[in-house]
Length: 357
Image (cartoon, rainbow, N blue to C red; front, side, top):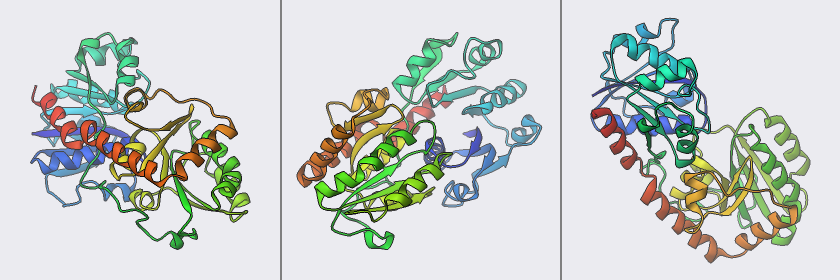
């Protein structure tokens, strides 16, 4: 099958890694894929089609969206947010091809009840939500909720595999090898910087209690300078070492250093796939350790996050980091959750069914 995937700017983030996993799995299955994007980070582009299959093509946007796609002669057009939805609608309508739209966040942009949103939702064959929380938002606002399907973001379990304890050399990053290590993976923007700032505020006290603590921060965003300044002021203060990694194409290299990962959404799933205990953290605050008892609201609906006092944060992190067996149990539990619900193979199976229909 020939599938044209239309996306907006692809820099670094959850949507980008989602597309990498989906497109590479489609190529493994013998499909032909055109990726038509407004912009692609060159380092990111190298992660698409690692086997250099001729079945993969990419085309940057021009002023003529139909021209971009027409030569590929797609059988189905799959649009992702934001402006890409309207470009995909334009192309699909002009070429008389079926349109699939995926919504990745808590918004209804492109499929709402506005005049253009109504046209898109009426024309589209399927509207995909990446989790149940997104589905709730979209189902309440689109004129065609009957077209809505939930297909979870899948993780490539051949790429994100269980890692040995203390995999990687912490000393390479100026960290102390025998100290407990927290790895934060997050966008440094959109309010997600707030909990990171709080973590850094309590890090010296937490390090003192633990008799040594390493913190690694992986991510980028418009609050990068704010976080960097805070790191510079704290680094090597007391029993604390901090490494600021910034933007990173291969997060797995830092996940290997972790005893505990602070993350949400796709970053949390990638860490869980690598058998790392995960402590939920997003713009709304913290959700605590992700376990069999709370993963459904946290991962399916993005709920359960709340503000912590500094004392609560120190107490919960201390309790986790001081008990190796508990961390190991959480790691195995998380890996099992990903296997059951977030395997890229299952995700693409469901996408193929949508495409074939």
